[in-house]
Amino acid sequence: MRDFTELEAILSNMTQIARGGQKVVYSATHPIYGNVVAKLFFKTDARSQREIDISADFEFDCVPKIYETGHVTYVGSDTLYVIEQRIEGEELRKRLERDERFSLKEAAS
Image (cartoon, rainbow, N blue to C red; front, side):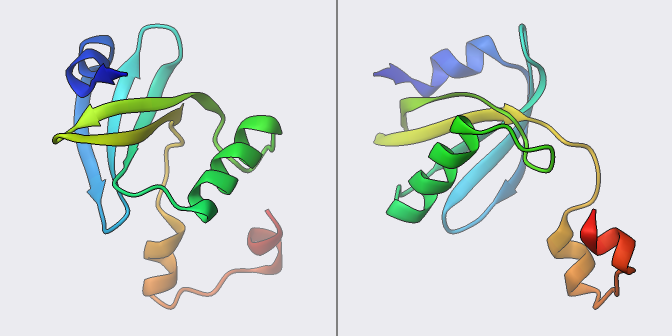
């Protein structure tokens, strides 16, 4: 297992963009994949692993492509990481928190 610093050495322009109870998310540039996000899961549960496996096994137009997964040592712990396609735009959660209504076309899209 490699250390998080090795992952940092591969990715450039790393900037933390979110942190929650389950994970920390960085925006970065990968030398092969281009604009990506790197997600570090503090605790891997069955649900998180299922979502990762499904996304990695199938290509959905509405789900960011997963390029790489693995484990690194992060803050002294074995931590699952995922490098995936970065999608520009506003988070759905922020729109929902504003009680924003969606048209049928937007919701279907």
